[in-house]
Image 1: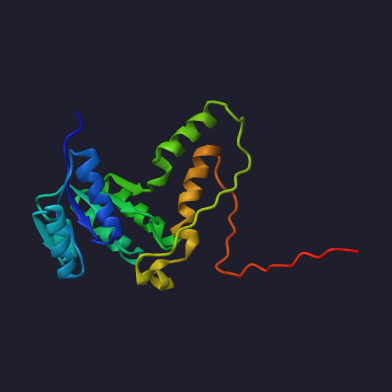
Image 2: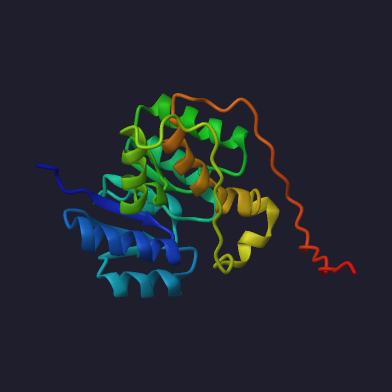
Amino acid sequence: MSRAHRVTLLGTGLIGDFYTMTLHGRRGLDRVEVAYSRSEERASAFAGRWEIPHHTTDLKAAVEHPDTDVVVVGLPNDLHEEAVSLAAATGKAVLCTKPLARSATEAKRILDTVERAGVFAGYLEDLCYTPKTRKAVDAVRGGAVGEVLWVRSRETHPGPHSAWFWDARKAGGGAIVDLGCHCIEIIRGFVGKGNRPVEAMCSSRWARPRYIPATTSS
């Protein structure tokens, strides 16, 4: 039987609510014991909403709290490396929300940090584990469509939930890192994770669709 874990949750925004609801409701074994926010008002309200016994605005104190053994990072992208580094230094397991980092260089530093510390590190990419995706991937792996050589994927939503997303220094990119990471991880399930990418291309430009009116010939 899996043992229960006591969690420090970093971040009290939308994703913090989502993770806490899942931990307390679906899994049931684990509990959030410490909530961190940069705002005392938000930290207090979040702790009250989810019956969390401790809350703080001190990031280091939240990570090092003696009542927890797992750290879940649900912070803006520019704070991921600092939070993961603090967690690794304590020897606690750490789970980081997507995207892992703002750049490949930053992501590599994060991976090096947790590997040197020898701690369990997980990446919270949730959409690749939804029932419909798991069913589709199982069908492909079972030979339903043969070897997958080409995939096209699309994802949209109304827009970011926080103002920091519009700051490229904090976000590290736009839709390609915020939404594209879901598509990429799901595609990896279809084509096989042993098939490694050799080239990637993306653009930060956005262009309004150009509509050409239909014409008729006499």
